[in-house]
Length: 359
Image (cartoon, rainbow, N blue to C red; front, side, top):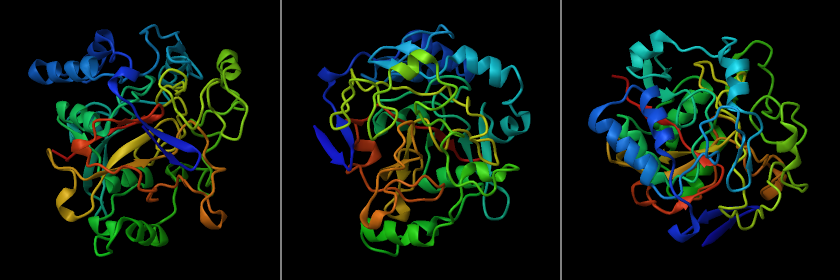
């Protein structure tokens, strides 16, 4: 069934509408990249290969491939990303971060006291630079995948801290305000408005992510011609031809994601990439202090970060942007189930990244 949110529709599809899960070759790649072994590696392989419908929508480990199943045309190839971003040294692994977080491709994010408050994946899952993100992942499955790696789904304020540069205390949730809507309004009215890239020289005054981050629009000069040709004209840039925004079908709404980190200047002060742009990311939104994500404990789901479909033209009441993408904004409450129970809610542009407590 579908639930309409402005011009965007959330899909909750039965298993008959979805294809098989990801490939064993992809699962092996993730296990190798993150140095997993034993029962931990086996659990992650099972989740990636047996969770029905989850996909990167590429169907090939060939780094030169960019056209995938389900009407997906990725903007550039993984090989292009590796040549232009990794081989050139624009993205580098940090031995200091790995020592602090005891995991690859994670960044420690400081709290108000300057000490590391949490470790966050630097890239959208699978947390591999220049790999396409995993999508069509229900929140429960995302949390299970994180747990299989010794991590968890990020709490909303942790994601916000990774974007803005520091983690605020949990009082920012305004648990003292009753009701989801009033609580959201209270948070947004008092929030710091900052974008991840503003920590970089020359970008301090910039407040728009278009052109700098992975927003899939036909005027981006980096788009491969074949990918550009698959974009339909209309009021919502970035949709694949044949994708109906009021239906978001699995087979027709292509996941046209950028390789993670390709837009290498779209990063936070701690080198956490794609907080604006590429896929939206689910986080754990607590409704009270007791359901901050910890172990198997979870709250509800918040969908954070802008994504490849440019939503800047969608307006709410009073003409204000309906989905602003600054770091600390509380997005509209869209999910009605707890993360641990949400087995059916997934979307063609929705992914996630993982967090872990500082060891």
